[in-house]
Image (cartoon, rainbow, N blue to C red; front, side, top):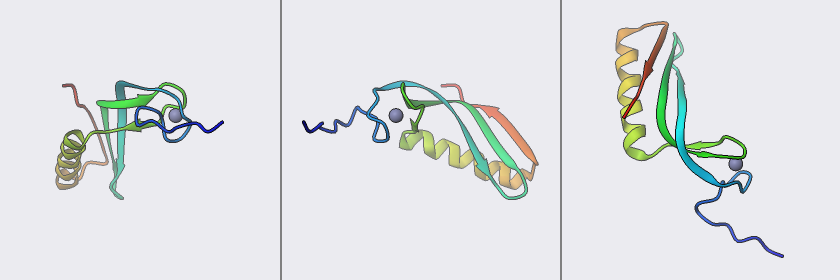
Length: 80
Ligand SMILES: [Zn+2]
């Protein structure tokens, strides 16, 4: 029996997705940026996460700011 792939299922394990939060990390070479409480769709089975475009844009801004400041470790929270 073939299992139809639905967009609301995890593409990795087929588990169900739910809205939640994830932690985003970026390696800048000289340091790392950690952003907590990032709104995301999370797989309830394997924990894979998907970040929406508008959130990804915010993260990109944060990464660019951190790159300018040149901190070794930058930890922040992205609460809606
Ligand atoms: Zn999954």
